[in-house]
Image 1 (cartoon, helix red, strand yellow):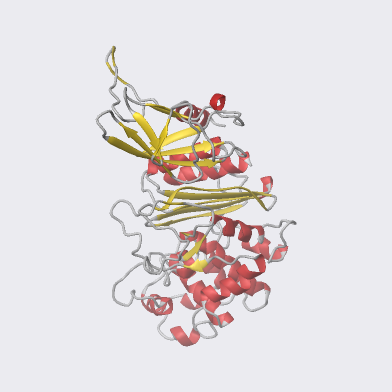
Image 2: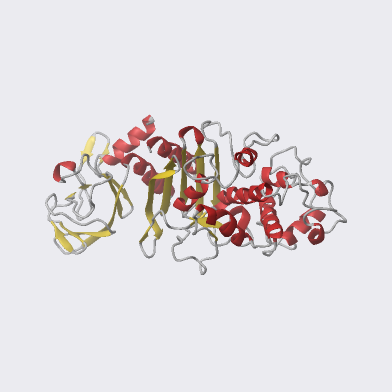
Length: 468
């Protein structure tokens, strides 16, 4: 554990005590009916080897006790102002004496002598306190309401928990079965689909998209194309080396509008010159993956979601990955997205970005997919080793990107492949580490734009794979 993690864990786990001072003169705070201390001590709780982790975020107390400890009968020690009485779920609690059931979100009321109540909520869970302290730190620092984390060792899930709230308004606790938008982690899924078609002989990486003989010869036309457009291949799109740059799939003006990817691409191919010579420079191009979704649909004769569910997910026993919709179309077990900095978490057309950022999944379902493309022996892979080699081979133009997967991350050189994702209201990261035979994913229902947010997810998943 790094010194930073040790310090953060120590400061958080000791107890919740607030004090203040000015100069050299200490000030004794008046607590009234606010929490001074809330702890669950091993000494007062049989079966506990160590004290619980308690982290306060706003009016929520997040608590983690060790694996195997029952949440049905925990004895909390609570301190507040003189004369304050305590109630949990409207039942009186004698601090340090009364056992309470914390299997569900509990309401803690601190009632002063004059009858004024101060309300907190308690969210308790089992888990690894070191891992959970890191997660709670991300939630607190970056204002993330809900997070799901799952991790595997030897293709078997070893750690899988939800944190916070999938739906704040309904106080619906997050679980590893909740669906989250994947954002650009969707690109890894599209890559798997393309490589499946390649392995089946339906496509070649060298297949051209435009011009005479191109996959979209009919839809795009063959006359008036910008220079070298007729030489763009499947591989160029997978590697982000098509020569184009810009967010043509997120633009909503003129010909670059609406939910038809091919219509947008037709305009690009005829009107927007390439920024870089074809195949020479990595330039992250979301439109390219939007077009790859259209390739899958044309070659397979199925829509994108249908192909993914039938041909990729079903063989792996995965049943709960979909193309997302808006708030009205939110699936029953899908979280709500909370955007920050004035952005609109429901402003994206999920059908339009289906192949580049539009999938929704749970962390546990994603771990099943990774197990099917990781060279492992416990879960049969859905692609042959030679196909996996192609998929994870770094581009000659940029050593840190392969075919829809990021590779060769310098800060974590032991990672085999990974991909992150960002949309308003969504932050995601998926990692595979062959050296540790491990994989992990974090999905968040909000996206922070503060410095360090992405790094915190990277550090968390590396730490989780060390712990399991």
